[in-house]
Image (cartoon, rainbow, N blue to C red; front, side):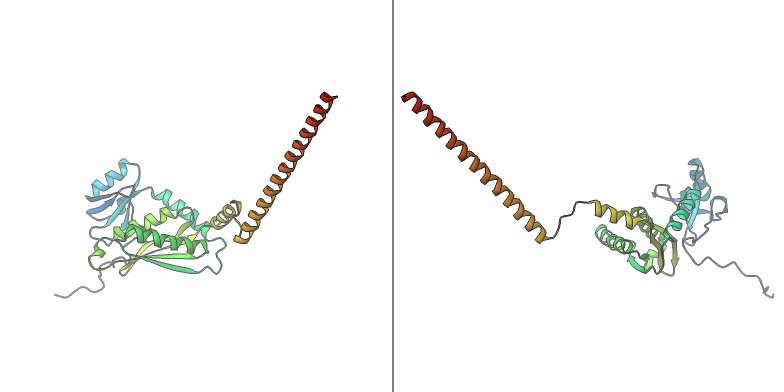
Length: 250
């Protein structure tokens, strides 16, 4: 028997997270999928028909976000609205972005709350300086079997930073790492600066000391004036009393 030439299996997708246009609804070919609900809940493994029915019942789409996982990971979402919102944010992020520096922040899939909070503060500082931020989730060993854990971190970050940043490059796998690129929203820095300017200014320590001295001087002057006034009133009262005594003697 001779092997047929020219017939090859279609190559598997390089990215474990669908980059630009993931498969939707009836386009998904897997028999069963690991399902993530609309609110981000990990719902477990479902036959594709059951997963599609759950999405249909909610009037939403079933989106294959990690096709190379075993089984593939799908999420229930309004894909049309998601694409529209991301396009608007990306358009805003591209305004005034000449010579923008790109920073990187690395996470592990099982990061604790303290490290997450610290790294998020660094990302906010980068965005505030006008830099883009490449967020990398690093997988090791068996963690590669659960890309949804890394995706959950990226989605949490995207939600926490939605007021100051937009997703410029959707999450995707490259080797053992998952990447997402975010960019500062146009005008977010100006709003922060305006809020800071509107806040009452405390002044330098020297200015505070001068203000305190001026206040003390003003209070001392007022007290001295009140004392002089009281003393003058007392003298007038004494004079009046002497006059009355003189009239009675007369």
